[in-house]
Image (tube, rainbow, N blue to C red; front, side, top):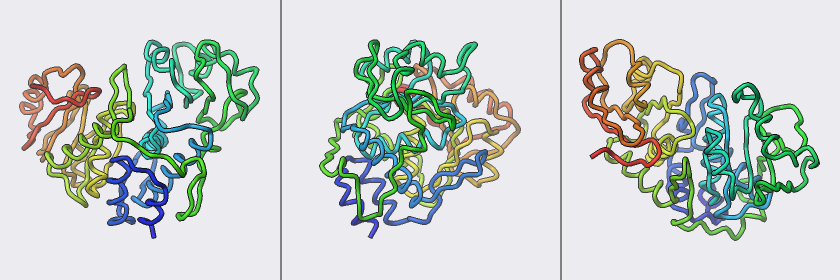
Length: 333
């Protein structure tokens, strides 16, 4: 029944196909676990939530290839990841923002902005900065199409808070929870082509096919299999974060996502197969222990040798160490 419902969605992208295969095989297996949020989702639940957001965004008038800019707090990691998968399934491009410079360049052709309104930004909140960029919000009624002089392509703003903010929709208003056999009329004829851009961060863009291929290579080269646990302490805005979660999900493995956790302690507690950290987190690993596979996320393909030596001297040994650039997904030479 699930596979028939997915076929009716007519979402033909490589990520949709790969995720659908695991959903059919392991609907009740744990897929994503956020221990600091006490959230544990099965593949069936991840499918339901991401499908609902994909439908809801389509109902707002988005089409495959349209850009959705996200400026979310790491505290909202579950929402961020579900939105990323929803966009992948519907063919929308996620533009991940995290700085003023990145905000202005990323917003140039965005159709929607999804923002954590009360997260601090400088001396103010993010919503104050957004209002300074898009003052037309104050003249726009909730649910009406936004018209911005600075960002003419922008049609709407979605905020993750619970209070009403003029000119915006609340994120909780977006999901459309249809029956499995149904889908949004807006998505009936969606065709997701492999070369559609899917994830952009700091000007680097990855297509559906690029991220799907990375995900497959990630799980194959690291030996991740169904039932394994992968620990990720990366922040939510990086392509490597989404790509590695996809890689685990494609083979029916569970991803435990805890950006503020002591990665080694969590790895031991979960009897995990893979630990993913960035170089800053690698420096802060505490204690001693053995890791089967350590993945280090780098910036600008920086050398990991000094950090590997430090960990070895500390008593942390990894049987296999692999590094990927957080943004480009490239391995170091």
